[in-house]
Length: 484
Image (cartoon, rainbow, N blue to C red; front, side):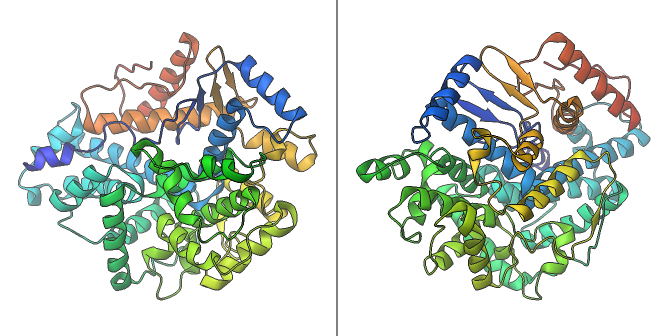
């Protein structure tokens, strides 16, 4: 396989999440797509309101996709994912500007870059391409296609087997610079990672990914799966039937394998306590000190084990075996997460914002929602585990949570619903379109942007206009933009 082939052997589309039968979530647009009608959902919600112990399938699906939304909006890992994607888009623009100065204006950019040899003669070009791949390698390590990840790690000439912990540290410095350049200033003190200790961890995580395809997606999907049983009454054999199906098919493994793995550590026969405790461990796993502003929270011996969500989850499981599970979401959730974090000497989600300086411009909706989530979590630690706020009478707290933390776009089989605040819709759809277009601009002949929800001509035209405005602003103008 030559250099050109290995450079282009990555996902043309954005790294995808799982696509369950009844619902699909997009991690950048934050949209949800459902294979049932709005009326079927309303009937399910009405039934659930009368009988809270029985969850219709449509409600389970809504809770599943809402949990994915919470994962991306309210956790450091979700913020990190979006930040890395934004960095990649920025790098695509930088590469375009370098090529433009050399007289190359065609896409895909990767084809033109691969022809620029020897690499030593084009240092700026290849260095900035290296930075794009730096982000790609880290995301592939976290949750990407295992075959593509392994081939890129072994064969990509830009890396030559560089340890992932070094990739993470280099990328973090770039992310801190991107935050500063966009008015999001943080108290970044350097990566502060223990490289030697991380190498063993990297080998273990890579082996796990290669043999079983287990990674961050396993946590995201298994947490969302348990949310379907958040408040349903399951007893006896049914408890095992629904939460621990056996044998597991390949399709089911990402949803249920970690749940099965957690069973010996969460010592309870009450299925709701199991679900609440499992969700707490998943949430904690996504609260590693992964963001640049969290670098000061890391000890001198910090390794990727404290940052990689799957490694954190497995470590927390061993600790949870010695701790009483969550007995009640309202009164006991905080006790559990603080005991688990204290046992590991890792900061809890509630402590991670203390003393962490981070400033952002008022128009940065993504940062605003993340910090709003932390404020809500400080008031009610189980805010993003307790899903009752969607089906119970509203108070000021639940009104705020359900207003801000809802999908910008929800597509049912008979209609598409948009967030009441159209700036929210425009922000996340623009983010999706820009990332999708610039990724294809680098990698593909086809620049068509396919929205992750059903749209009418007016919505598509608006998206085309917004995308055209952005591309013109960064110097990539006079291009046909197709949104479908």
